[in-house]
Image 1 (cartoon, rainbow, N blue to C red):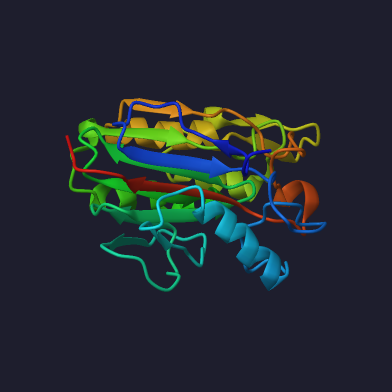
Image 2 (image 1 turned 60 degrees about the vertical axis):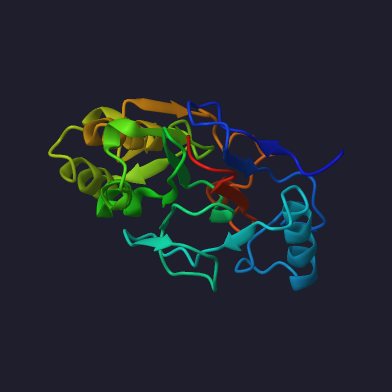
Length: 251
């Protein structure tokens, strides 16, 4: 392999907006974090994390600066002009070139946003708690671009084939949208449980906000153990990096 495996969004963002999702392939971490774990909070060795992050950074211009998060499954969003210490938020927005906005995932949904001029980008870490709390809405409302000038891409997350939740989760999600999200849940084999569709929930929210260009990778992190980390599947495991940045002047 020439370098770590990566997934590039198939979306309508300008060419100078760069975004990708890593996979679990191409790093040095040992089981159960094999091999390209990029999270420093899961119990992996600091040496392996450092080497993996160096491999990630080597894929990009050395002038790029990196903003990481201490994700809290909430609805707080930070607007940044430069990178600093990890922030305890679940959404990042920047309008400056060369600032990589990063989230870490292993089942939760990464939501990428960009203006159609490429002068503003954002990324969201969206688990069900963040979706209920309004992390997508808060991020879009903080962006300066009108919603109809934004494009969105949904990266790899756990799919409705494996995301089993209880009645309390279903109720909270459905109530957050006045019942409009009922179709994003199907009865599980265990009739006391439901299969939740994070892609469907996020897409509905984006469309309601006025973003009409929404595409998705449409994969399941739980299903593809060779390529993706999955907390639901494995428990103790690594994390993929999801990042976006502006690489050049706006159109």
